[in-house]
Structures are given as structure tokens and as C-alpha cells.
Image 1: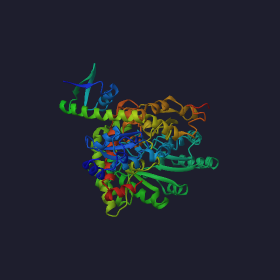
Image 2: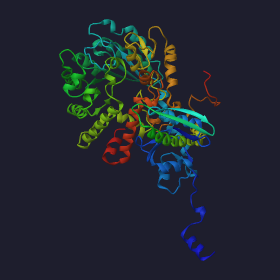
Image 3: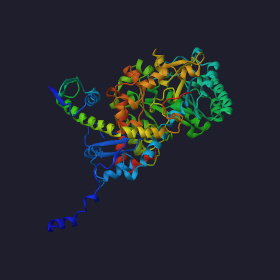
Image 4: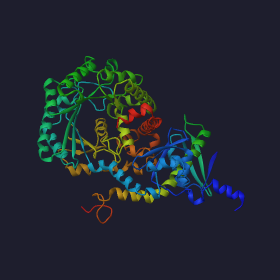
Length: 493
Length: 102
């Protein structure tokens, strides 16, 4: 060996001492730009939702098999189960186990049963997602016979948990039927032994002390609507007397006293009037001691379509509203008031854990029918709440049958359910199957049917996709940035 | 002006996936002019100008090509993982055949 070669051999190890590029294997993975239109950084995820954010050159080296095992990204990608090598072959079993855990909700089957006990309501909200009628029309109440049949149907579910949600109209206007359903469900459950829960979605304006006493005794959770400060809430939710806000706040106070502070929740809906008021809305929730808020966009169903409320802002404008709200909520947390944003909490749970969230609109296969199902006031059975809302406007695509005339098998195996389920599966859908957010997202055949006349929908034109993609990116961006925001977000899972 | 894409480098499905993903930006016609794919791009009203459409197409085409490579190299592993994930569940009968006999 000449002098120069000897000198080099002291500086470098023999070739065998270096890892060979390409000695790893890719696990099934997808990637998306970390920010829309940005070609520098990419989010890479595997089929069970583990993700890493890498530079473009790392992504290209990764896919072409040229990523050096000496690079810092190699260990990150191996740890995140995006690649495996001879030392980590057990990764395959681990990924399989995680995938099985993430998809177990499919085997659990239907767990949420919505009983529309009446369509009557004392409010005339323009964004209401069902047609409302005056308070005195008994023709819009569910009967005991229908409720009994619906309960027989409910207890056919293989799910170990059953949540019965009372919906309307204003369900408290048919309170005797709520009492009937609760008592009959509990009687049936003595044999079934399910984890049985009840929740009523009510504006609280007609809830009496006797009603609240019953809710307390029977452990019925209450969920109400609170759209923000008085002027905004009353504008969004008009009623005779223009005092919806005052009645809601008084109802919340009474309900908390009767059934317990944390057994009363609230939901808001974003109208065009809300878009510049997100801080006021959050402040209203803080002022009334709520520690969770759900920043919800308008949905393209029911009267939101008729009154054109749905078209009054774009997906991009709603995302702007959402981001401002999320930042403000994080700020309130940093100032000592613990508060979660519910949608972020659901998405973060899907991003950071293997637990299912049970959120019907973020499932694949879609949650319609097989995660939640609706018994309408007239005995009709719908695959989803959105489906029955569309039916009130004349579109009965998601009507599965009638509880009085159809069997469990006829309803659950109806083409009206199986066709949208099969057509909207994300894992085989164009764009979705290659999306890095696939493990966190869901099919929403109701939304795409309502907006595009198609169960699957072209995702390049989908507001559902645009909103979710941007929120996924925003949350992952905040997690990657670290610091106090990331710590708070992680605590929401 | 048409863009020309070498057929030896990009499969038809890759070019189609690119056009599908960008359908909200421009419409396009794909023509087989062996040995190239000719892609005629028509900007949508209010959308990006032609030059930007071409840039979007070229960028997305490379991404779609990477995705096709990933699918190709992970297809068998994906099948293995899914088989493993659902083994021992009632979804897969003991003889391993798909479907149920109930």
C-alpha cells in the first residue's frame, strides 16, 4: 500500500463498515406537502397513523432506497414505523396490531342511536338542519309503538356500548316519550348488560324542574346550543320574544344545579355573523364556565340549504375562523383557563393515538348506519342525522326503511346503506387512498351526496376535504413547532 | 401549448392521477402520441394562469410518480400486514379463504 492509501485507510473504515443505502424496506406509506403548495417539507404517514415531517430531498432518498442509515432522518423514520430493517423486523407485527386497534370500531358496529322524539320546536333558526314546525302539532311526535320497535332494533346491536340520543325539533316538547324510552331501555338492558348512556340535545328553554329531576335520576346528559354572546346567539336562534340566549343561560344554570356541572355540554354553529366573532364566542363559553367548545361549520343539509345559509362563506373562510379560534383557545389555556376545542381533540386523538374516537363523520367505512343510526319521528330509519335532514327537504336517499314495517336485517342490509358504504370507502377512493391524512380522516357520503350528488365526491372540489386537510396540516404544524402550544394540544387527547 | 411526457418514464395511471388531483385548477386532455403523452391544459376561469398550471402539473407528476413507486414497493408488505392484522378475527375463516360461510 502506498503512503497515500495508508493515510486514507486511517481516515476511513473499510467499505463493509458503512451501512449500505437501500438496506431498509419501506412500510406502506403516503405523503402530502406539509403546507399547501409548499414543496420543501412533507408529512409522511403509515397505515396506522404514525407520521414524520421530512424535507423533500429526504423523501426522495427514502423512496428511492438511498437514505443512509447514518442520517438523523433514518432513525426518525424507523422509530415512526415508516421503514424497517433487519434489526426491526418485528415492526410488521406491531404495525398490524396497531392497524387492528384503529379499525376495531368497524367490528363494534352501531353504538349511537338517535331518537327524533318530535319535530316540533319553539325556535325558528334559519340554519336549523331540520324543518321545524309549530309547537302544537302532535302529528310530528314519535309514538310509543315506534319507540318500542326502535328499542328492539337498538338492542340487536353487537356493540357493548349503546348511546341513545334524544333529538328534535326540541325533544323536551315530547318529554313523556323520553321517559318511556329511558324506562324501557333500562328494562331491556337488565338482560342485555350493555354500557347504556342517554343524552338529550335540547335548547333547555322548556326544561322544567320535574324534567331536570328525571334527567338527574336517570343520568341523562344534556347538550345544548350556545352560539356566542347574546346578540349573536339571538340573531342565530330567533324565537318569539327574542330571548333565546337568556333562556339558554338560565337553562344551563338550572340544569347544572339539577344534574351536575359537567353533565351539561354546549355546541355552537358558525354562521356568517359568527365569522368575525370567534373570540367573543370563546369568551362566552369561558364566562359560563365551559371547558370545551366545538367550533362547528354549517352543514349543507336541511334548512341551511333552503335559506342559503350554507353558501354564505367558503371552506377557506371557515378554516380562517377556526384557526383564529384555536389560537385564542390556546392563549386562554396559557393564561390559566383549561379549555379544549372538541374537533381538534378528536383529530389529535386520531393523529397521536390508536384509539378510535367514535366520531361518526370521521370513519372509513363511513359511520352511517354502522356507527350511528336515526329513528325519525314518523318511524322512518335513516343512516345518519344528515340523511334525515336531507329527507325533510325531499331527498330520501339515506332512508333505510321504517321501524314499523321493516326488520333489522332488511334495514341493515338495504341497498340504501350498503351502496354509499361501498362507494365511499377511503382506502380505494381516488386521492384519498394516497393521502397522508387517510388514517385520521373519514368518508362523508352525506356531505358529498348533498354537495356533488355523489357518495364519494371528487375530493379536489370537496369542502369537507379542504377543511380537514388544512386543519390536519395546522395541527401537525403546531405539534412539530413544539413549545407550549404543542404541550397543550397533546393534553387534549 | 401541450406538455409532453415520456411514456417510458411515466405510466398512464400516473399522469391521470396527476390530472385528477389538479382538476380544480385546470381541465386537460391526455393524448397518446407514442412515445409521449401529450397533455393539453386549459386554465379554468379565475384559476391559475397557463404557466402556473404547467408548473403545478410538473410538480404533481413527480409526486405521483413517487407515490406509484411506493405502492409498487410496499404492496406485498401491505398485504402481509393486513393479513396479520385480521388473522384470528372472525373476518378471516380458519382456512384463510376470503368470505364467510355463515
